[in-house]
Length: 342
Ligand SMILES: [Zn+2]
Image 1: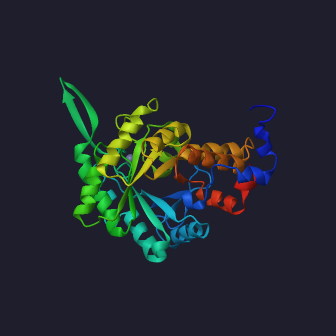
Image 2: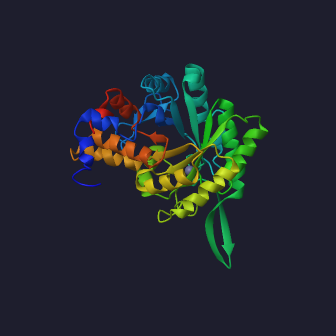
Image 3: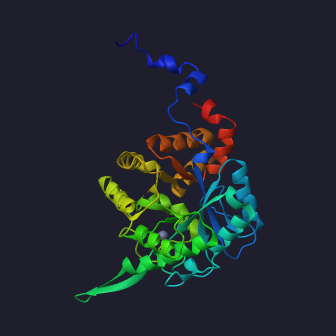
């Protein structure tokens, strides 16, 4: 049977009929809201590269902001630290009074179990050179180059994760793309008795130009070189399945693909290869700012395009979306715009 008997348009003729047969639904409960916490400030600071986003002080302003997220139904936050001091070894990253550790304790104390606290576990915000691992020098045949050392970095990542767990984090999220990072962190957490702290691994993280605005926000751009020796090559898709498989073997509880929008095919592949794992996708700073700036210029309908993108990420196979749009999108969903705009 085909045309004129089969007419897919029949199901598109009315708003509420379209809604009834819509395959994908998103909710504020799908979102993790990323937040930058900065040491040494008292007031929130606007991030010019990310219109509408701020760096937050570790005080009642941060608590109020997270409370606003809770009121909108967004109960998960992912914290990134912007410390005052950095060193070669990234030691402020595992200082028990570091900016993230203090923020975790504050939110836990003030908001209790209402908030699920994820923390980014990496060194790049805390090292003077801005790389995600320890920097070493390798000289072969008189030719010397800087390399980001894998195995010595692992021990430090374990220390960072334990310090976050001690402060009260629910889930640690290692983002450095060092080989073996999930296993090293799992062992470090378990050794300290944090067997119930989960790991959300940045399992397939690409060396992407979409991170540009984040680097301005977190001040973590590498001082020399780039991250192509540890993050994935945007030309690869099959390799993502291998990367994710390793993290699964090492004990990751939640998997992640980053970025999201240019990697929807990767999200789909990972979803199909690992159907039994929660899968997060990180709708990154460049994806966010691209829409914000285009909307500001009047080129696109912001609400519609943001909801379109968030639905696309979920449709691709992610069940968790890490997004800077979280609070605005939650408001729009509360107004029923996901129903009315499509
Ligand atoms: Zn990093």
